[in-house]
Amino acid sequence: MTSAPAADAAAVVSAASDAGLTVATAESLTAGMVAAELGAVPGVSAVLAGAVVAYSNFVKKKVLGVDADLLASAGSVDARVAGQMAEGVRRLLETDLGVSTTGAAGPEPHDGKAVGCVFIAVASPQGTLVEEYSFSGDRAAIRRQACDEALVLLGRVLAEHP
Image (cartoon, rainbow, N blue to C red; front, side, top):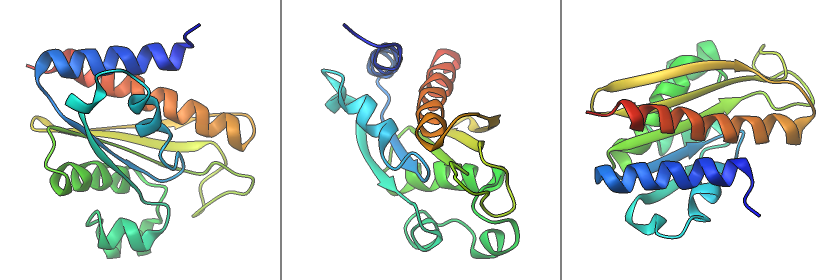
């Protein structure tokens, strides 16, 4: 039996494949969960180029090109950081779309942001969309919700793609 997140991943893979678009992920709090959900779908190799698990600010800066001053002033749980992560992985892996997740999964607040505060971004040739979420539950629940919503947001961008 297929769970809802797998169905969302299948819909994303199908939409991206139908449009001839490639995807990459840059994940902090989800640590590769979004890429794993996509990777579980048959035929994903035509769509998913790769992923960067950017848990540390070092990786966000050095690999994804997130502005060091922004990280120093705003911290990693920030809409602009999410946007730069998505843009960075898109540029790095030369894909059509980049999706990123960053947030505070708990058990403690992170960078002054409450547990459950999450930012998800999708970068495309048309621009970068960033959404803020406030999830509840324990660490595992927050990470699961972030993964699910990243797939939903990616699907929404694909549906609106010209």
